Image (cartoon, rainbow, N blue to C red; front, top):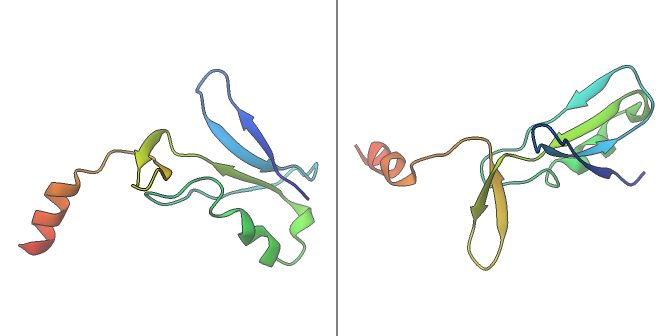
Length: 88
């Protein structure tokens, strides 16, 4: 089944949804630098996947990953401070 892309007007939240007319939903949040499309395939590996609605929200913050690739994040990360902390 092809997911539909929705955009909430109030919050500007964008998400993919596979609507199986279920009363139960599984919501999967992607990691830093990914997008709502990255986790979509997980639903295909679940037995009885049609028992659930599947929702894959997109992070609020746009990230440039280089080579004209766009990704998303849920909150900002100070990469310079993270690298310094990892070296210490």
